[in-house]
Length: 320
Image (cartoon, rainbow, N blue to C red; front, side, top):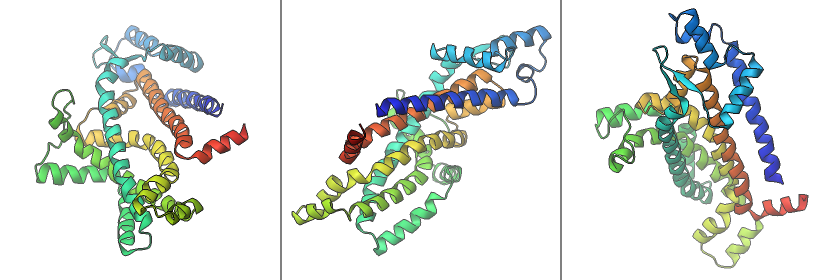
């Protein structure tokens, strides 16, 4: 029931987000059809307004869009030449895999690096090593993604000439070249995440090490490695999971800049061009899909809580 209630709440959030985008797009000055085709005839502009749905009031437009969206119709993207339209689903089929792979690589790399580093720093809390690394992570966490991207693009790609500074190679085309084309964007997005995740996990590990069950495990003669990764890591990873889910939204935002720097032509660049071009249907659908990804990640995190920490199951059982 808790999961069902959570999903219901998030569906309500999704409604307010998408309807809010509708209102914001309508409040923009000027005519969207005129922006798309400044030299179009009155008949052509009326046709574009009908396709966009801007000839209707905001409520009729929104519920028409919502009905089409739920049936898999994400609308049209208008090309520079009048009469040329491309389905948003077709454009997403080209751009979404790139962005999704970058996000999966980034989150996986960030978590894989952060977990052993955070556990190690928590165990070594107060030592010189802990202080040096923790202070360095604090500094790294404040570096924006675009600064990391520009530095890596200039130093690694252009100065050392180890990889191409721009471009994307599909995984199905060449595995080695694919990873060479995404390594810099992934590292650029991962740097601040690793710093944040590691610091959070370190704090939780320090707190968990003071628990009675850890003292009991230690008194049984278990090795420090077994205690840390079997008894300490699971209850200490709840905050990390929550922050990782929340950072999916920031990853999408960071992808807009990173995709521009490295010429990836993913969903981020697609969204920016849609907003600039007043492509109402594309913006509406992209925002909705982004919100769905964010909502799904948060629901999955709620489900993982009870798997990682039995105390969460007990609390839910008590409430019932």
